[in-house]
Image (cartoon, rainbow, N blue to C red; front, side):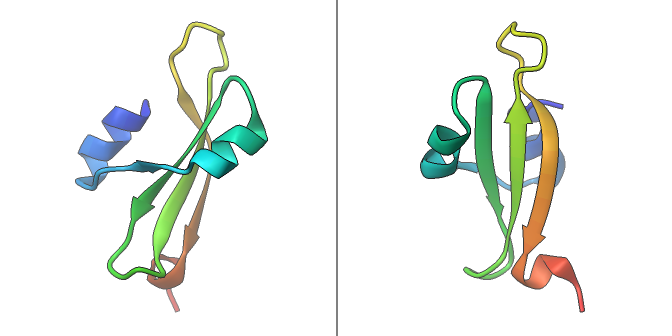
Length: 69
């Protein structure tokens, strides 16, 4: 699933986390899908596993209200 496909599935536009993307380096993209409040988001690390430019999810971490009780 690409970032754009995940955006469609979740119904929320992603925002690139430029600082984290830079920290991870070439072949990685870190995006945040905003949650119901400003303290909540789903952060997803995408990786170009095959070296063809197609990013696929590598890990996800929720924060704020998205973590549940």
